[in-house]
Length: 237
Image (cartoon, rainbow, N blue to C red; front, top):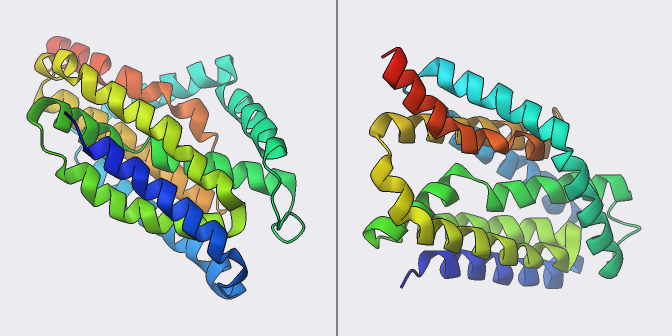
């Protein structure tokens, strides 16, 4: 039985609750500065993943095609709408203090991607499904706990709810890993990791407020990375 997804989801749940409780006690300077630090960490992780790329054209093509698919399907618009409805259901005690509805949506979407669609989480789930080693997800849980705590001080208890889709995604990946990983090659995994790194770079820039990339619209790139890598290796390598 896999344990990594439950540990990771539990860290987000506890961090979200703790952050909501401490929202009135943490100084404003800490609450306003720490998200930028986590954005910087996301940028650093993204860079480390991108440099593992095996086939540069695959990474570029998968990202471009994935973003186009996401734009045509209005993925980010759908997520924004769903998050907006969820926010209306959860009365946030510091609404006036935390900025506008649009700011809430942008930050919440960014951390949904950070928690649910990170290359580390996806690869860690797949690795545990195949080998039974949860070390990657456990390491990710430590970072996610503090990240959830900080974000929950400004976004409220809604951050804790992210543990549900994250748990479902990681459990699904771990379950399907026995079918997927035997078909992969090191080059395919490297290209997949690099595409995930690009998404983390976009997420970091979004959290830091530098550029509001439509990160959700880029998610199909993760589905295209391995097939394109296999085709490139077969025809051009």
